Length: 138
Image (cartoon, rainbow, N blue to C red; front, side, top):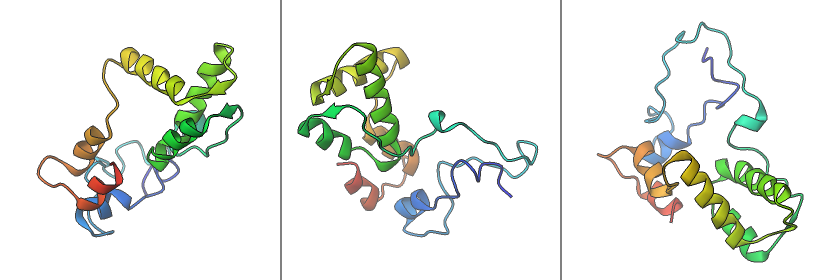
């Protein structure tokens, strides 16, 4: 049994997006059975992608639209991060411009840019580009 089953749930989306086959190997999963002692690994919800989107502040229409363009697995985490930044800086309305500022500051902190075309290459691999995945990141 996979030690990560509580975290990723064995999602077959990447395999399908990359190869058109739900049963194909997930190109981004390097898991080897037993590699982590055979015990299920659990991570707090604050540290995981795929968080439910719960907006607690006012969001402009353009900010909501920008949030909806994100991949589903990242929406909750991005919303929480932007709202945390707004709360820390006494900002009551989330705008697309604020989202851009938060993104730029996070990129500067991490030393790299967040590009979904980059995500696409890392998931699919340099030798295989999936039309399904290409369309989903536009």
